[in-house]
Length: 423
Image 1: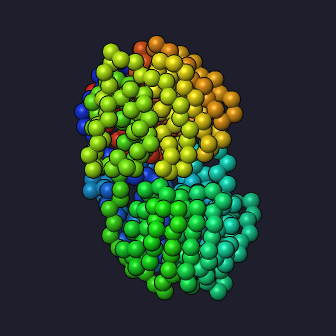
Image 2 (image 1 turned 135 degrees about the vertical axis):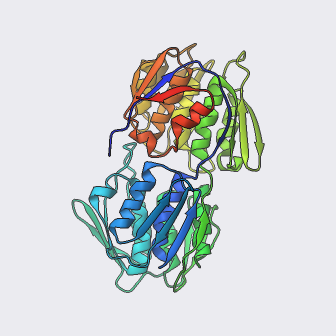
Image 3 (image 1 turned 180 degrees about the vertical axis):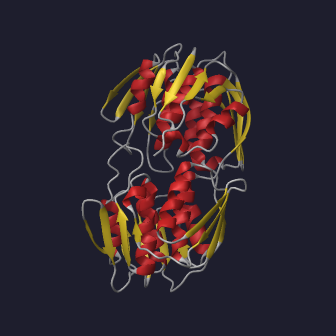
């Protein structure tokens, strides 16, 4: 991965205004993988201009799929008519975790797949055993070597009831895609319920799949013999939206994010209200503001699968807790290595003690700027937010992580009044 320019933040500038939510990173990458299921030309709109989209495009291109990204129009054209390889190569897959999503589509359409063990942010084990167990229930046979997962289904996949031991988003998506072309009916219980699951199901159904229950813990997929290309508009990114609303919380706002349903992150918005923020909602926008004469209030948070508090907003909320009145407890229940940003916040003056999957945050009156290191995508964004609220200058390094998931992060913050630039 190429090294991106550092982000320089001068703290203390007011933040207010309106931004448009980009398309959801955690949805569009799976939509791209799903295009493998049907030969022909697919069109996906509201596509974020982020490095992960380019990496996934390269994964698809390596298999002979034609991909054109109209950056100005935020649109992808994907032609899957001439797929030439069933291998997703290690040199690309090692850079992007979401590439595991090609396993199910390749396996169900071609009965064979060779997918390198995926990489991405180092925030925990994120084991693939749930994916494997689910696909084995449909008839997958596989073995792994030092770099690759080699999977096959010589007679094709057959639908079956599957209970996921944990509501894994990736496993739900892989299984749902694999089941579309399987013989018979697949029932997924304890399925992930995230909005991105429903978005993927809508795309698959527009391609000819027969899926009901997406967005609930009980999904039913009736297998079909063939699928066709489709057009799809990606839902808004709830994590990007939440990140900009945290900026409003830190510096007063108001900030409005348009193009996002408040239902996508209702628990996070409830926590914002408990922190003492004003939250206004419409069907497709959220506005957050704060009376700066009133302190943020300490609030306990525990990350959980949707509709619980999203792990991808944990780091951003830790910044607010660092400046809140009182002591907050944050429980990270999804990933075991997701407090790496805490040390950098402490270097900025925060009072944070971590013990296992708990972080105890005692609010301080101010943070001070310094040089900090982005250890993963959401940690990097959180450190930029901390810089917005800190006294003096903050330099955030290793920002290629941020570019993986935030479209125009610096320019959007500039449009809200932040003193922020690339160096």
